[in-house]
Length: 274
Image 1 (cartoon, rainbow, N blue to C red):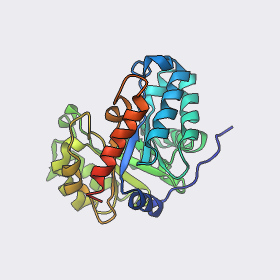
Image 2 (image 1 turned 180 degrees about the horizontal axis):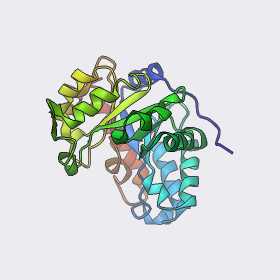
Image 3 (image 1 turned 120 degrees about the horizontal axis):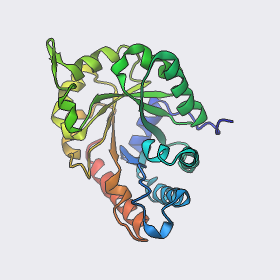
């Protein structure tokens, strides 16, 4: 049977959470079983204990949690159970993201949407829009759920296709401009890497109102100030993801305390921007 559904978090609720917490921090629970503190036990039980401690230490400062599903799927059936149990630990008023990067022909996407919106009650899922509108539309048919499309990623390989010229503009701009017509700012977001902060101003000209999920601040070296300068809109419109810099702030029994300190540090910096 599906897990108990979490409350719906619409655009207004997300904006209010950002305003209330003075934060647009998304904590990435991309938990690597090989990197958690040894005293917890490097097994599924240890992963859940680690996630629980991280959530308890950071939920005061975070408006979102993102689970990269690969770190759980690699554990097989136990990994799926870990995602279910981790979602139960996250307060219902905090936005959750399945970083699964799905996207396939329509009937397959429908099954992916059911998996991550019904079986696992995530509020949103990341999607690769390469296969076009019919691969994304099934995710937009769920009330109160969000599709987060890859816009411009921070990896080196973004140069291979995304940054290439297509007619009078780059491929990533064409993808964003076209896909923005499939939904609206109430059910779609875009991933834009923090290491591409200088491109955010042009992206904002295409999608002024959509939320942007921005990875790459912290361990990957992206600048929070630059992202906010070029990417924030009237509603803030940003979710800044930090994973390794928070999760692995310490490797001993102080890991949760240090994670909380790093989340607090980022929240204090964010107070200046939104």
